[in-house]
Image (cartoon, rainbow, N blue to C red; front, top):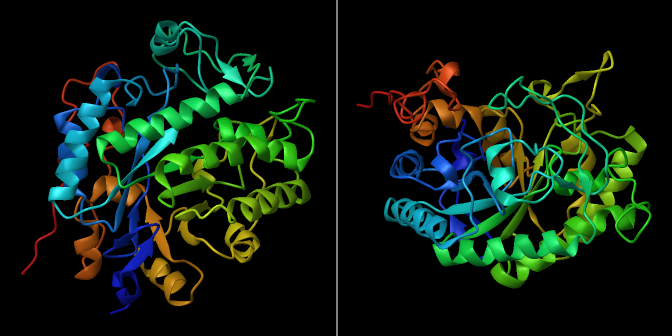
Length: 377
């Protein structure tokens, strides 16, 4: 079979995956008031055939994100909700990591959760991202100028605390969200980080925050920690000149590679996540896989970014990837792994109006758990 390379087991951290098809993190905002639900359990259990499920981004503290019903993990009720989901996935034979998420400057002070938090929107520097639309706030405003975090160790502790609660919920591991212009990416990028202390300036200083987050989470989970990176940038107004991008991410990956991680999830350039600002596309377009895959010497590599199973099988067979992560097609095909194994097409049409919830959503199962399965003999 053309896809056979995807159906060999692989060890990731301390666990063995039954196949090399990973379900990528995808924000679906079905967690009312940040709490995981039975509907979310149904969604994840439907997809437990994946070698590994990476949850949607799980907020490590209250933040006023563009996703008003994103789940969190900072209190015991959230832990109980996630444990219910994790237990369901395990009972179905799956493995599941929590993706730990802090959005940094990609939050808004007038968003409900940020007001409940009672703290400012924090970021490495007081520089607003351009663009953004907070559709749940009157007037759909864009990003605001954040407050420079006085002591980044405070947020590093929040990542560690979230890892502790994730372990309590039974997750097999955690993935640190270091991509898409969120807080770790904001520290790495010279356009969003203008600090002059130990957290800014040089490549080493800008990488420090993300590396310290990884070290803190490893104290909780050992080798069962991954990180997602998107060096091409674009989304949430990040992106540096090419030489600076290569220098920054090569250093960061080299140092993180020494920490005994489970995997890097490297995301290639995606036109879908690029944005036009000031008359030009924001991303630093380059071949992420060819540039950074050779930098990794000790850690498994999962490749992401519009990869279809046929290409993924070729990447794994060639040794370029240890696995692939698939996002959008996992939304529309709960039985994606079975379809790939049996040569069935990925032909469900996406229900775009219900990819996330909105002001008029009444049936949160629509476009979430109701996609048809293929017919098998």
